Figure 1 (cartoon, rainbow, N blue to C red):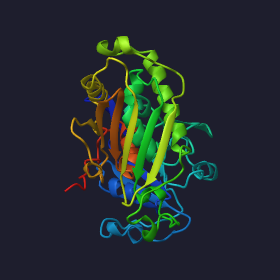
Figure 2 (cartoon, rainbow, N blue to C red; figure 1 turned 90 degrees about the vertical axis):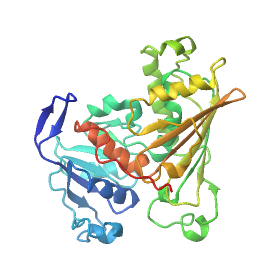
Figure 3 (cartoon, rainbow, N blue to C red; figure 1 turned 180 degrees about the vertical axis):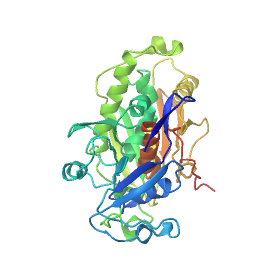
Figure 4 (cartoon, rainbow, N blue to C red; figure 1 turned 120 degrees about the horizontal axis):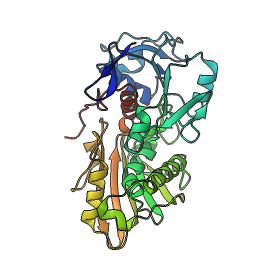
Length: 358
C-alpha cells in the first residue's frame, strides 16, 4: 500500500486500499467487524484467520453475510497493513509471540491484553478511546481498543475529568446485552435464563474498572497542564488521585447495547446548564458522541458507532446517562474509528450506520 499527502486535512490517505487481516473473527465482535469493513471504501480484507474454522466460508459462520463475501477462514495473514485481533482475553499476547508479524504492520487489539500495559514485544499500544486521545491515536502504530462498559462509562465521565471536576466517588449502574458475554453458550447466556430476566454480576470487581480509572487519571493529569475554559477556571479541581468508581454491572434480557446510569457529587455553585455546556463543548469535535438535552434511550444507538449522553443536576448530584452499542462503539466500530485515524482517513469513514430505532 502506498501513501500520499492529503493537503486537505494535513494527514495521509491511501492511493491503494488498506489491506486488513482479522484474527479470530468467528465471534460476535468479529462478525460486526466484517460487516463494517466489507462496506468500508478504503479497505480490502485479505485474511480472516482462525484455528477452529480454517477453510470454512465466512458467510457460513456469519450467515447475514451470505452474498456479501466469498472469503474463507484460513491460517495465513497474507501480509496485511493492519491486523485486528478479535481473540479471547489473554490470547493476543500469545498471538503476537507465535506469528511472524512484520514491524511495519499495525495491530489493533480488541481484547484487554494491552489496555493497562501497552508496551509489549517492541510495540507500544496506545489506549484507543478516541474521545480522550484522538491525536495520540492518530500518531499511533498500535492501539488497544477499550472495553465496551469502559467506553460507555468513560463517555459519561471524560468531560468531568478533563475539567478537573471529579471530586467524589463515582457511582455507576450499567446494563448490557447478551452479546457482551461472547458467542460461546454459558449458564447465564442461554435463552431460558436470559429472557425476561436481569441479574448482577462481578459486583464492584468488573475487569473494565482498571482501564476506566487509569484513563481518567491520565485525562485529569492532562487537565492540570492545560488551560481550562474561562468559565470553569475558578472551579478546576484537577487531581491525579485515582477516582473511586462503584460499578454495578447488570445482565440484560436483550441482545445488544449498553445503558449506563452514572452520578457523582456536583461542584457547588455549578448549574445544570453549565454542566450541559461542558459536555457539549467537550464532544463538539466528535463525529459520534453527542449530548442530548432530552432523555435518551438505547435503541437510538444500537447498530451504530454513536454514543449519546444526557446530563441532569439533582439535589447536589450530577447524573449522566450514557448509551452505546456494545458491539459497535464498544468494540468493532471503535476499532475501525481508530484505524481511520491511524491511516489518516476521516474519522467517520465507513461508519455511517443506521440505528435500529423505530
